[in-house]
Length: 350
Image (cartoon, rainbow, N blue to C red; front, top):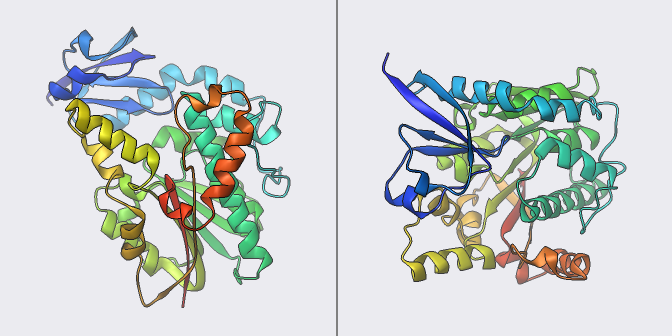
């Protein structure tokens, strides 16, 4: 088998020349590392430390990820051991919205450990999304929109925190699927539950390959579709796998939002090429997201969104929690919700 060299870069970031040189690289979310294929040009990266050279089959990315997990996740698992398994806790019942990501907040402690955020902005924006998801779920349950609680699926479950919240909202069996095995390892270790009334399990499974063997009372798919090879197939699977009377919550990145518009404008002004990942994120303005889910089988119950103006420097401003709370509240109102970075849609199947 042909062999390829992979170099692991710690605390690194890809900069301009890497795009121009079309070098092969990918960012490993859990470890915060960049893995570059072949001989690297160090001018393509910010300051870094090289810690290992790995020789693998040319397409054997799974083994590479597993190697990274063994090599770099030991400190994470040691830290997570303090929290232990979350199955005994009711995170949804005790959830309180947060706009300052106070490290004293018990839920934030779980998030900080599970996700090990690479920067403060990502941390704040993730908490905004969870704040809105919990608000939406409480509204759906209070209004009696959700009738059956037998089964749910979390598509692109990551470390499993949404799966845990869904379970805590009363669903008897929650299936989480993702294609990143290290993240699933974390979910299985700290979130999975075998309780008959609160079962949570995780699988390495591609959402494009979901069949109609199982139907679900609730489907969550948040910030996932834009990362798939065949997004239209995933969208059709969501429509098809929802039981009659079932509810789906889907979120997509909104190209009409200030953060994405500013990113696009910055690339244009500087003459920087728009890479595949950014192009995918710019493919779903809110009006197109709604059009993609227009279907006679589905009734749209609600649209909402979060993050109108959070940007990289805002968290440093005095009084930021007040600004962030205003950001959250404005984002849910018409017409602002159609211009939020994370666009939420709630559907019910006829």
